[in-house]
Length: 145
Image (tube, rainbow, N blue to C red):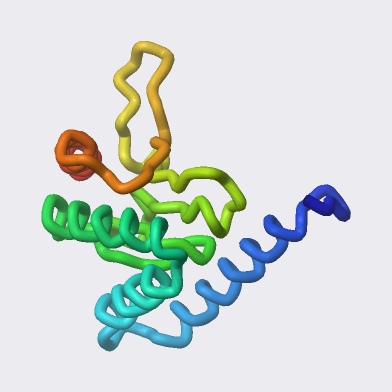
């Protein structure tokens, strides 16, 4: 990974992608923004490598089924789910991040900290098992409650 001016090429690309997302959001205005943002997320998922795509599709289905109040949107070029414009949870492609696995994570907006001084903010994800899907659903429900 090449580093210039403190940021890697990958980090600079993510920042540019986020700037483009913000510009696109501003240009859309109110209209049918939610539907357009979900289409952006589904298009991004469709572009992923097969293993990442399968995991992202499952997570998208789990999040939208268990927290319909969360709106899909792109966040740093990856699928995310927001309430009132603030991202609560997100999927990061392992292939895009050049990691051996993808991650599903939560922002501080999710409020999952339980006060014991240590809690996970993201989880490594391959194709989720039924048990993993139930755990994801429970975490998403907790995040929106």
